[in-house]
Image (cartoon, rainbow, N blue to C red):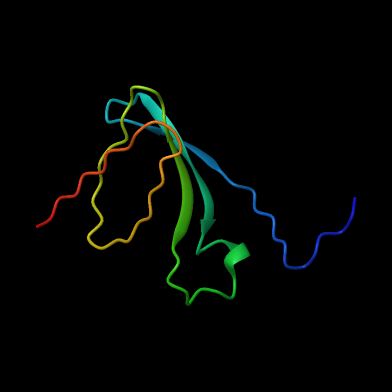
Length: 88
């Protein structure tokens, strides 16, 4: 196998299964890149936080949670997404 260039970094991504409040599995998420990963070393001063992939099983919902201050970019690959914003 050929040696990869120094600028290519490989990360083993973890798949985390999620569940609703009743404990029933409702999907999973995969942490693709996180500012705390060793692969991100040297770039800690950037505003970037995290890239992750989230999947919801058919006819299921992901639970709501609150972030007091957050920027998100959301892209729906298949199906539909409903985002709810509560402003105080």
